Length: 297
Ligand code: ADP
Ligand code: PLP
Ligand code: ZN
Image 1 (cartoon, helix red, strand yellow):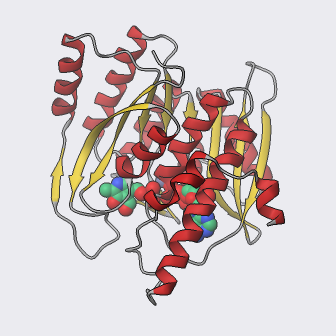
Image 2 (cartoon, rainbow, N blue to C red):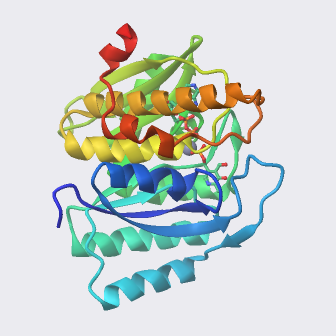
């Protein structure tokens, strides 16, 4: 196995634009990972546009691919990465995949973005919440919910930094040693809240990063964030704060470039059909500037 690792990434594919695997695979490759994508859906474009068309993979079809890999002894992975999952049957198959990969590599890191919704609204069937809570969270190594998802998974309302950190503690107790709430709107600020429980029964190391809010609506940023957190926390396994700072730095550069490009064309930034300028930002992904430099510059 390579020094950085081999990731099985089960996420959406869009023909045009950057969400799901289209948003995660390229950055992970830039950071030196071998990435094997399984496309859980193939859509023409992301769901922020007026319409989309395409196909959905079912649990049996996912398992078929896994069996194909297994038949050739190709199931050694260092990381499993999952994002948006649209049905209970597909999510149950993901659990089987995680178990199978761990039987081959007990050290497998499962990075799970528990995509449920945003801004108070679910965008998956409601019965997925209980499956995530009861079965998926317990087997995840790192969890990257947004504020709404952390609330759904813990039953907490997150209105202060303190309840954000408490929600992380509840999630640690359920399984994952690393938890990053990728965005939380608290007291007018946009916060990332991170927590790493290095040793069981010892309080976790916790931190927050205040992020500049950009007045635009982006799609695919959560998927990019989770991929970068996987990448940098593999490089800095004992320093989640550093990993998160590097990821945030790349995100800000990508989003700033996106906004600048669209502003040149007079596009409405609050329309939900923006595409992030991922490819154009490859230098900012490979070599993110430290946050302190960003604040100065
Ligand atoms: P999701 O799409 O899963 O809800 P988030 O909203 O948490 O994901 O976004 C992931 C990351 O993208 C955040 O941590 C932040 O760095 C960045 N981001 C997304 N939208 C904005 C925004 N409007 N302003 C600044 N940063 C943003
Ligand atoms: N996958 C598909 C097909 C989507 O359309 C979207 C959002 O529209 C996502 C995943 C998730 O994107 P985000 O990273 O913004 O949560
Ligand atoms: Zn998300």
